[in-house]
Image 1 (cartoon, rainbow, N blue to C red):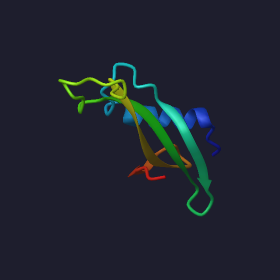
Image 2 (cartoon, rainbow, N blue to C red):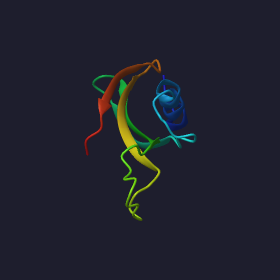
Image 3 (cartoon, rainbow, N blue to C red):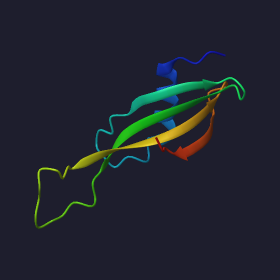
Image 4 (cartoon, one colour):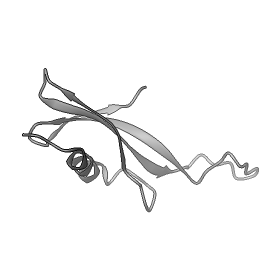
Length: 89
């Protein structure tokens, strides 16, 4: 079964939709690689979460209300997530 990039993102969004704390998490497919040895896709998805570590007294221009986090997922040829990892570059 061939899975297209849009389908990979749709599968990831469905499984990750409860994690973001932003009203519009802006899911993005950042990276995708097919692993022929395991017949699976390794993908990296990013989304926005609320910045809960903002300083209350001295707001700076570098402090944002939201920030983007990245997660690596493994999706098999049946469209099932078989792995969820901390993404490290």
